[in-house]
Image (tube, rainbow, N blue to C red):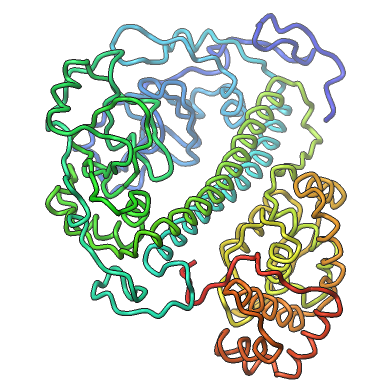
Length: 622
């Protein structure tokens, strides 16, 4: 981006050089920080329409204001230095400073962005609560351009940060989607098993629904040799000692030990008279955040507080299966039903023993555990990748603000494209992007077509990184979560524009707008020698219409399912499976002769499964 023609030394080490025509002034020459006013929560008018701001953002409503919008709110106590903006009149309480048009001798929106580079680390020491010293803040020096440049900088940053914020929000929605899919995969596996053709029977428990024949139903208490919690009081904590876990340290997918507290060796020995957590036990949160289970896999001594129950299981029960079951939707909802207390929530030890779950034989528990370990690890890795993309976007946002308000870039005529780098895309999104770039221009190449292309790339080209788990849907193998994830990633990367035609049944269309050659190189680096097979498959399938690729993908999936079960189907078997057993709509959509023609084509092109692909599911929860 263009720079200013000449620069000078600012005289401030953290600013470096600034444009030659700019001034460098202390904050008190530009504005002043006004103190907020005391406004206790019990005297606020909750029916008012004026937002009340604390040090870290809105904290309630009131009927009058002390700041005139637009206004800047600066944290004074607690989250000191935190910046918030209000377009409207607002009330600043006594933990914040505020700046409005009465105090700003500059463009107030420019000032808001410029304050982001302020070094507000100096804190007052007059109380035990860290705070921002107003006198120190007033002496902080900032680069000050002309009024016209201030407005240009403010407009530029309003526009460009809004783009970044929208991308961050898309990535956060993707993380939520992955979390939903994770929960659905767990819940389905621990209540329906892994065999989609297994006969079912009523469980007699509403939370569980039908369960496979050969499974039982059991209350948690029947699976435990003992259930106990930690001490019912707060011990004396020490700086170094034995970790003392509370509910906040236990999560479904990881331990949160950064803020763990410690107890003395003597307290550890005393508390261990009640219960000793060991590898293979399950920690189950029962206070504050209730209903979260995790198997102990820690290799050091620790103890737990009253908000955690330690479950010691009977023999011949897989603790990881039980933990997955407790974290499933049905068991979690039961735990919330058994939780008491509006403020201090508690899932009592006796009440938690009444939580029902489905229980298969031990060998099947272990098989489900291995499957869920694989699936959750894949979804967690995807979530971590998206989290990294968010961090990168936020770093870019901070760097853009700094560059603009310090004059490192001249933004008066600037337009900056912002996107998630294509290199951060997951394999599934890379595959989808390449398919769309090469074959997505045809009028009927929409969501159904793309989903079948992804399925075939995963199962026939062996691109396991796509990671789909496919439902037997009316239009063929379907993974809604994968589809939504791919669309969100490609949109966030400015690689594909996703649009929908008008109307309730409007079709979705894809327009590739990214760098196809770079995307292809990135995918090749990820999948290695499988790239040639993928490109051949894409050439064979890419120009197919929606009906034909639906037929081919459905036949391939049914064929692969037979092979998974150790059966070698005839063409008649495959056609019957698709028309009679796949989905009720298939019989009307695809004639026997049409399917026979597609099978002939598949054999001629050597598009034949070997039974290594993942089986499809019926009536899956996605």
